[in-house]
Image 1 (cartoon, helix red, strand yellow):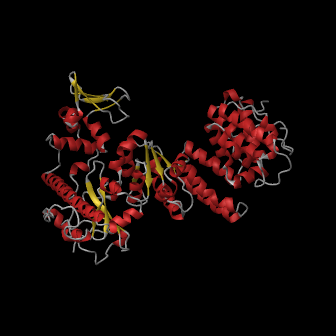
Image 2: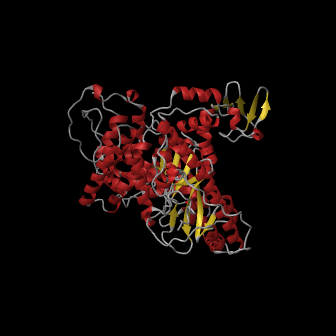
Image 3: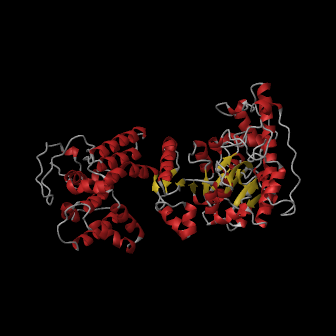
Length: 615
């Protein structure tokens, strides 16, 4: 019995199921007649091509997968091979003739790296390079394949070597035979999957014409027939077939979505030489151009979410085959020009849990990779396609614009229990243990320093001075409490602001704005503090103006009307100022309460930077 996802490809005849459905029996046969029956019987739709005969597998495929060729295990490609490829491969050969326009001794083509209204990409046969004089980007044949087809350097070199019949060095004849067998098997699988894709698609076309179960399901999900055709969706044995393609648009496998309640709900092709879940992203071939032009990619939970987002205009959406993401998949996105990855999972506990696991698995790959990951938080109980269908595309654009850096999001999740029960020592202890675990995996640098400061503030700790010695402090007005005499320090311990690091001063000014919002007793001295950053100075002026309209005693941080009053005027302010004040007002209630009750340590730390006492 063959599996409905692979359709019986003859490769070891393994049942093609996801891990959840491994070992499931009784799956319907995917012989060509099954698709015909599901489509409504003979004559119910367009005539399909004759069913392909089952190809015979190479001897190696009957018992085991061929081993990878030896050259794929070497630490580096031989310099002689790279030079041979660079000298023989021609950039002009990589373009369809219809895309090239003769210009002098070379050609012009449309640049893929920017919105090119007229051809500005020069293809120079003499230098064997392409170069755009508008966006100032260029590539040789190897780099061109890396960029346009999403290949690694090794894959691009080997692909060009095959095209130009350049021999790939092998360690021994056995390794060469394995490499050739693997290449032939890949070609056979690609041909077979292409035939399956066409057969399944023809079955879906018949179902759409007959208003069958697949047509009804697509209508319920808000997917139009035109979209189903664009994505080459298919039908086989009561499953909606979603082709999983590589970056070049070649079908590598399928994900089948049950239409009749059969479990598992989704069933994927089993792993083979083409289908490796950790090396594929659903929708990447359709999203590549948008990712390259915007530098951003949206990662959603499932293939149907991708299709619905593309239909709504979010053409940079992709999905992994599950909720985890591998380092190889990150590299695929970066090769397509992604500089920022936005994670858009469902707005429920499962979605937050999946986001947390994804971030935990990618921390080491994200730090220093050049790719920023940000989290898009949806309203509680919503998902991307439901949000769009209920409220329109703008309802998703707003959360995307407010996406937060992965570390900021992770810190928010870590400290969230304090919002509900800030005085509970058990909660505090658990948060502290999780905080130590997070800091343990962050390498030294700016991210770790930012996390340390945030955690110190949230857990009620007074930030430590970096100079190692507490400077002598004169009495500061307005704090309402006498200051203890501190040991004197040398003048070098507290240099004047002009000699301090600009970033340190800017951080202290930001902390002053935050303390102004949190501590009524500190507002008068902070109102006359000299702030050098222009945006922060305008924020200070706004806070002072709102503060002057508030009268009466304030008993607690929760009863303080200042944050609510500031939030009310944010929409009337220019965007950068409004966003800054909104961010300040969204501080955790636990942190606000700590600064409300114990502001002295924070006030002293701020003044030590902005108004040091030199003795």
